[in-house]
Amino acid sequence: MYIAIEGVIGVGKTTLARLLQPEFNTQLLLEVFEENPFLANFYKDRERYAFQTQIFFLLSRYQQQRAVPEILQTGTDLITDYTFEKDALFAGINLKGDELVTYNNLHKALAEKIPLPDLIVYLRADTDVLMQRIAYRDRPYERNMDSQYIDEVNRAYEAFFGDSHQGVPVLRVDTNELNYVVREDDLKWIGNRIRQALQWAPFQPELPLNRGISEK
Image (cartoon, one colour):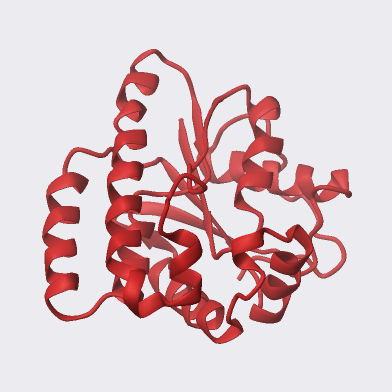
């Protein structure tokens, strides 16, 4: 099985991927973003540095994703904390005109070689919750993060990931009231929902939801 965890900046994708990896006994492929030399400048001046930032991310993610077929061919299950398609989502927000056309042509050529996951777990949260989580983790280049930009990305994600995406089923999980780092029941609930979505035993068909947790 190949499971991709998706969601907006600060929603908790990488944390959840790390926590689920030992439970599901999978290999883990995490997005490499700190190596992007344009990222800090992008958050200071998005219009000026958007194209360089997006092209670097596209090629970096492509290089990472090339390993996916090899991993799956060994019979090993895999969890990632992003999809290759997310790059195009951000490009649609950050690029315009000829830059966007150039990017889309390159993305289309590369995407043909990338396998799709069996399940996308889309973590969502309200923008104010995302801003709180971003502030809490306190990455230097995110300290001046614009809430309007995060809200724009949040709305784009909501439109991008419905009940399915490119034929891949999407499990939508509202994380506003979740804290799977502290509360083991929250982590077990998500794990059960993933197993149920994949019909991957063992799972409980009717695991109750607590503290207002819901699928949306």
